[in-house]
Length: 249
Image (cartoon, rainbow, N blue to C red; front, side):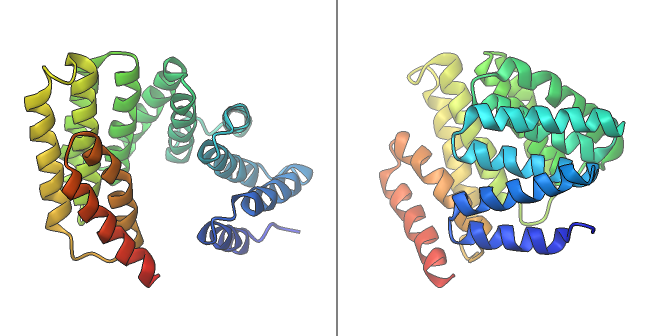
């Protein structure tokens, strides 16, 4: 019997909406085992991707890396290593490696994804912006700062052409502030930090009337960074923004 993928993913969303990560993991493990029993390669890949992301969220490094390796192995078995779907998996795996202090292992996967995306996607595809941003984070970990800066600028260039992508641009500017601090130290990077954080503020304020969950998530993610750099009142303002959105949902 074919796996009812749509219903499986809808149920997964239900678990996530309740922050029931244990239930989500049981759910994914069950359907991964079903996919493996029927040698359903597409769904083995799908559920491995979901599990590596969930385990990353849960800080289960060994398991997250294990599912990343399973996904990479499945790509080879299916001989799909040059298509866009494989590139997305490469990015997911690279993000897992980066999260658990293996940025050196992440870079080759980002490079594979970059080659595929740049060949197959339009220059204003938001997936490219996400790739450049995430790849830059690993470059910063490896102190390859010039390459990181170039990637962050490319990410912004892409996202400037994507509708309603101001929050994603704001995240990139905050990442650039963090990279400048890592490169020069917090005192010598002060001018860059101010410039980048204030640009991020401008972008978040330009769409402050948004009431969707994505905007709330970005505000929640950005608030601690503004707090770290001394923008205490703005951090409080972001907390109020995402708090109002979450209360309505």
